[in-house]
Length: 248
Ligand code: NAD
Ligand code: ZN
Image (cartoon, rainbow, N blue to C red; front, side, top):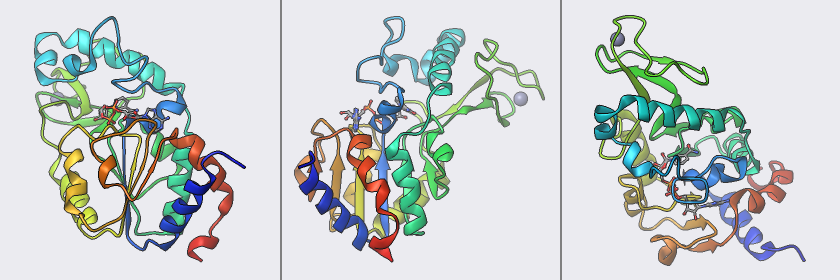
């Protein structure tokens, strides 16, 4: 008997029955791709805690330091490829077109796996934004020259991500809220569910069954219909072979 077989059966049923599912995912989903989470092993960089670097204040004080950290992260992500969890989410979207994936990850691996109905809640690591004129552009160089300058106005550029203490872009927030309010299944995968406002989204769907997949418990565990203590890629890998019959 395979590990987590009973949980997989329960998961199959819930995912197969949903007509308006939403997934909320976090850094744990990319852990099996080799991208460290903030609070797990490998999250520290030169003894700095991410919570001290991913802030507007840190960038104001020392933009070079923050950019060097982003260059290190870009290097890690550039070598990473989607794992079975990214691939299952992309396949689920093909099966249930209304499925919305809300990710806190900035690594772009969902796009690589083929997800299109996607809200990148915290932005994207490969986007840089000018702090003077506000223009954004994609820059995939690793490393970027530190600190990068805007080709249009010469202003200082910053990573196109949402830092601790910053507001979520209005469109991303509105789209996420609407989808969660209308959902009939909430998948919460690989997130510690403590970073707000994303951690508050499940409260908008108190009636929807919640499925959590995470090796550790989280503040959402007590309300989960199904709580699976497993690495999410390892749990979902066998389901990739299911094809489309569940919703067919
Ligand atoms: P977090 O670092 O706070 O928590 C990660 C969670 O993933 C933990 O609960 C942990 O138990 C779980 N986890 C670890 N390995 C797992 C696995 N194999 N399968 C399932 N779960 C696993 O991350 P967070 O909740 O996403 O929030 C922190 C913030 O850090 C986010 O806002 C995000 O923007 C940012 N971040 C992004 C990336 C990325 O883009 N890949 C990486 C690190 C941090
Ligand atoms: Zn500019």
